[in-house]
Image (cartoon, rainbow, N blue to C red):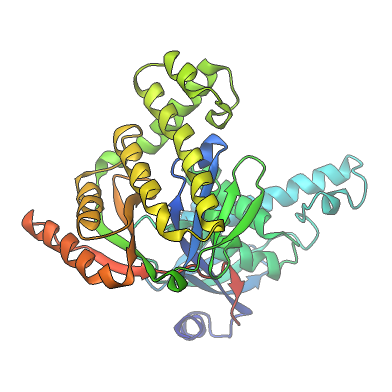
Length: 398
């Protein structure tokens, strides 16, 4: 395992352990997570591996086999670039530990945190660490390499410092790092999929209650493959657009007098009270939640082939109502369907990244040719296309 050799070369000793956390692809349920809605992602075979040893002096030493020069941080606030995702996890876990200490100091009943499933503060205060990172999630593909990085570090620190966190608490700590330290207002989906994923299953997540259910997603037994089409593009237009979409949703919910768009039960009535962007965002979120539930129903009934139409509908809604698609994603989806895919849609935040296509085994080559041909006609670089199967979530390897 090259991350172990790199750790030995960097720090002159063996790591205390090696952990892995996967990236994720979202089958359906896009831009619903921060609206307290429903999502259906699954963990990928690719992810981030971290060799880690604790340090008692609080210093954080980082090396990424993909990012170049090593980084040494006396405090998390010193971090820049990719290192902020790692430093943010240290910050989030330290903050949580301080909050638990304050609660205990105010007379919190002993054992209450554990009864509530809150393991923060059970172990030692989170100090520093020596860390070497190795990742194989395709960069810029919208497959949540950042969430995998956060989750693998949180999983390692949880064990090394005896924090006693559940898998969902690890996901929440990783989300807090990205929201409050990195400054990206993401929902919980990416981190939850990376932490809680199971092999051969998709993860149904209620983003309000944080309730989860693993849904069997055995493509091979149905003669199907789920292809990821990595467009390899990222449009600068996307900068700030994610936060703007989230604000549109918050404003619409406030105008409708509900806590979140998940609570809209009369869509026609709601749309009649809204206009412009708020109207379009609401239409997408409400209908996308229904599509998630419909896909789950079909999967539970064994009708895996029939989810294709819902994937198509999701893409049209993301393109026209949420307005987060782009030409490369649209061409990938349209040419995949033209080549024989049962259904296809963009996945992830949008403005580039990846699309997914549900394809029968005997149509895979036809879909590949159709997509690459459509890109070639436009003078675009050929996208990477590879099958994805549900993999296990964050775990210790050594």
